[in-house]
Length: 448
Image 1: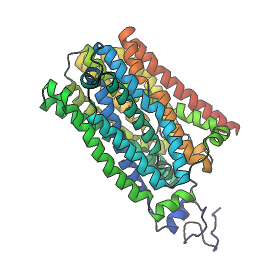
Image 2: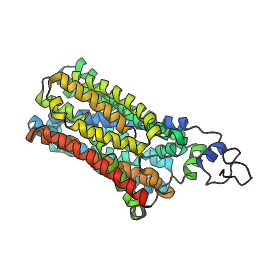
Image 3: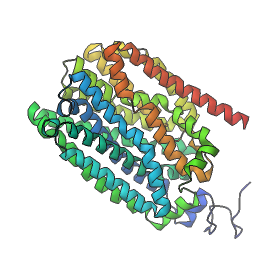
Image 4: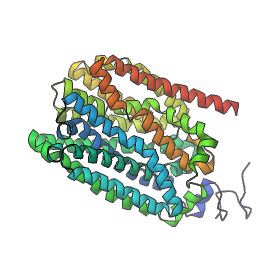
């Protein structure tokens, strides 16, 4: 039965004045804001975040072991670098909580400005950070602090636009719109890998390690500035503020969220475990493994991964079409099962020379695109309206922490000490975790 407005019209067919009307009503009231407009802000914001993310990730595999841990052998130095890499994911939920409070006290615009200023400062700080040879242990401490700053800033940069996009999308195209923000990952990786590959080819090894690796961090700072103005241009307008407020996309007390909807946070974080584990096993981990145990040039392998990122982008697009046919959770569960199968071939492919490595990267990125395309928000629709903004942010933070934060250091440590077969088990455990969480979510829905 069609709902009616306060003036008797059909919802969505006439101007609406009630502040809690549905998404279509809000569109009509605010001049017909199309989900595509929101998608632009989501893609810009996520692409800039992922570029920062991958610049640091690639440097952790190629640069930091030599520059900040020269006292250790290459394996130990890389494990140290990956440990500091994980600090941002630990700091991220802390940043979310801190900046949610700032938003409550001031505004969404001030919160976003401060978060992206902190991100830019931390990123530029890494670009100017003296090496271990110049500053000793202090350089490692500063690197860790700047990495923590990046994590806090990333948690604080949550703007609510992905949730707004999901709520404002047509019912039959929610899978398509859900995947748009995920396109930021392959775009960010392509740019970051392209910059590092260019610097590796254009410079001598000494020049690259002395100053060349710093250039992508300068670029990251510049991209942050552009992204800040692009996102503020969206979230500061009256129309978007009205949409965000009408959907109750404002911070909720974290303690209350955990008490009332804690199970949704945990299930949402675990549901995408396979995607997040695979994320680092096809990007950061193999780059470090090639550096340690293969003679393949890093620039050549980065080119291969750039092709993989292109495959992932196509997979993300396709995931939207599939999800709109069979459902987002069914898509995520099916891909978790395929990732479980893929995990069995990890040792053979990575240790199979260039041909095996090529297959591993291209197939792995393909599976990553198909699964990661629907990894965000597959179960966050379960949140009550007043908890959705904070719940979606913390769910994403915990998914990264549980699934991806320690994947590079664990995978490299296991493969170096026990063999690549243990990397298969690690990835398999992520797939099993996703399937278990999705099954539990379905069981809870049936019970309710």
